[in-house]
Amino acid sequence: MGMNISTGDLIQQQHRGNWKAVTLADEVAVGAGGDMYTVGEDVSLYTHMSFEVITTAACVVYYQTSSDNINWHEPLIVPSGTDDVTDVVESADVDTEKRNIKVTRRCRYIRAWVHATGASTVTVVLFAQM
Amino acid sequence: MAKKLKKKFVFDESKAILAEKGKTVYSNIKPKVRKVR
Image (tube, rainbow over all chains, first blue to last red; front, side, top):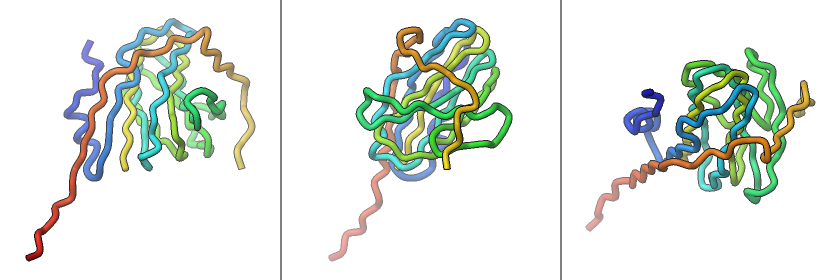
């Protein structure tokens, strides 16, 4: 399965400044109705962040923020198919395509949480730019 | 003002899969510095 986001893709999406791209989940199999979450990533040095998410079935993607990498803010849920974005979290139904989820909140730690509506393979890459 | 939850979703770590972190790619583009004599 060629579901990986290549390094070339990463470089093409960042044009200036110092940045990092972190593979937080690499083709993780999640059962229908199951959940997957990633480790927290320290992004305190970065001002612009986004997640690239690839799934093979419909999933709902959330991100959570934290100040201590232990206690996580519970994200608000946004109805799918809308542009209704809160200042806390953005979520999206994704299905067999790469989706970009922009982080709209500064934080110290961030992680992704994916709820698989159907059995899915999930890849999550975090882009963080200064 | 933040909106209220549309529906309750439980983020229960004990029932979720913790993904193993993969590689990190860094770019450290340093600005060009012109020497002044």
